[in-house]
Length: 454
Image (tube, rainbow, N blue to C red):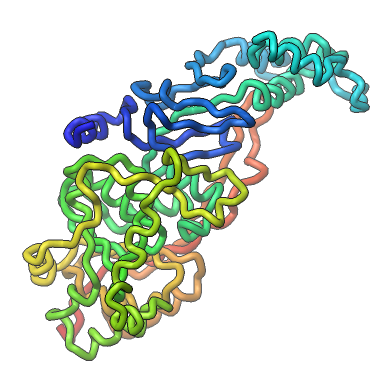
């Protein structure tokens, strides 16, 4: 497929196309899979391999159901809503005469349909919904349960015999939610509400030049580029000789125009003429276990791990719900034929940044000492430019805030702790989610000022 077609579909963002990245939500978040659509791509659900070709050319947000070995579009039925409201009066109060589960005994004798009977139905070509209805019809206690319990029973059997697949668009929110749920250490335990607050406090807006220090696999870089929408520049800076991983950026389906706006540049190049040699040498002290000395002695060290994670095994499917996810680099997505994001920044652009400064600064470096890094990169901002720094722990940000106050480098310093509570909203069952995240890290924000040494 041509790069121009890829870019047009990416800008549209409503319908999938061959070669695009998607997030597959299986059974309401039980399993989350990143995949690149192609006619040969297959996904294993349960013990069946199903083709992803039916997903090509369908709108994002479509719901599919596994029917045999193929995925077929599923149209939601209003019967579920009617079942939910069966025991609710017109005034919204629970029905006192409704059934309850007090007399039910779970002794594994209520179901008369055996496993052999289910296998016989499958050999005869019965679908998942037919098996579910047969299980309900052969259950001695189904009619005695409350409507809520019946719904729970039906949903449990549906996940086993008729799995549903939701086709989600990979944007900053969905990607962050997927990683935070299944592999939070890969993104430094950055929660979605923390990410949105980080972008807002740094005033990421159109036609801005944003300096980013991203050590969370490119999630922050991709979120900034998505908000800029092809205007301005995102400078992904790094210490030492090897740039940090930007694997997540490849999942965003960015067009060629947006990819051109994502560039890389070593911090040493940005500081070469703006800071004194003594301050430039301090950058090497901030580098955490990057072994800059060994890389400078080894001519292959600078490029040894640049594309280490860009190759995809098999059909380019990355599963965030498997047990061996820790041993795999996720997401493993094959690079697009379109313009590659993260090219070296042109020298004239670097010179412009040195002269005029960046519009704002964003840092997400959970494995690095924050204060030495901020001390060196903050002068790269223009005066009155905002900055926002994320860290999982409070102490590094408190130390950085104290030193910024002593050095009189910034004003309006503030450390925020994002707070989020998720609610389940259902008839007569509205309450906070039982398994929600209670901690979202900390954010240090402020505004850079012209120090007396400028």
